[in-house]
Image (tube, rainbow, N blue to C red; front, side):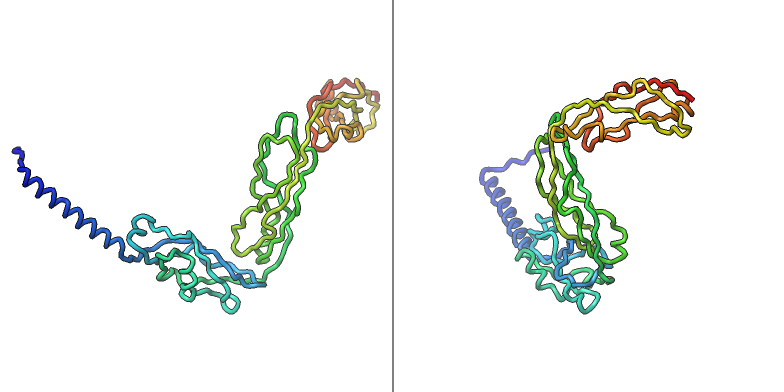
Length: 315
């Protein structure tokens, strides 16, 4: 294939032509991207001015398609996103009717967007709502947590939530399904001292149910744990025939991990152990296993000595 050789003059002319073409394309592209174009983008709805004393439920999803007029630059680089990524709609008209018309609120909606963007229309243009009588209910809270403690530390007493319940308001049929509400997850690591913090309530996904308060106080008593050994007499279970049962030994040693603040409370009075005579009557065991039937709160069982005891039954 023959190679075309250009003279220096021809090379200069060819370069000028290429530069002119690139400038023309750049100018055309700049003018084209500066023009206004309509495009469609989906966005989330947020509500304000909710009607008082009414429980409402939208009869369509909480997302709509916005027909937005913006520059070609926005269409090219924003990738059909609007800012902010949601719009707030007033529900004030629901005090007198069961629907909201977007075309009546275009001015207010456009004030929420960037000045270079303009909403031309919204699809669907009308939102319909179902109404029912609003009732109130109080439900208990459950703390969702992931807690890890430093060695030898743990929860010493009951965790306290303030308040320990939430007030929910909404349609009776929706509230009947709700029996407990959860918090957001509380995640803490290497804990070695008392925790006093606040945790948000789990976000409500039901648009027609309101929840109060939005956050609560959480107090977690934390203490260092140590071992304590207690001698405990054995009780006898299922001795329905009132046999004379002699146990060897009559007492066992139970070793617990207890909080230092509760050390004095870990006594024979709140620590109970027993054997079950059904092991002999029904299972024909020659030794009876020891079962712990009561332990102090927030303590952990370390060992039982012995775990099995000998026995003699005199009829």
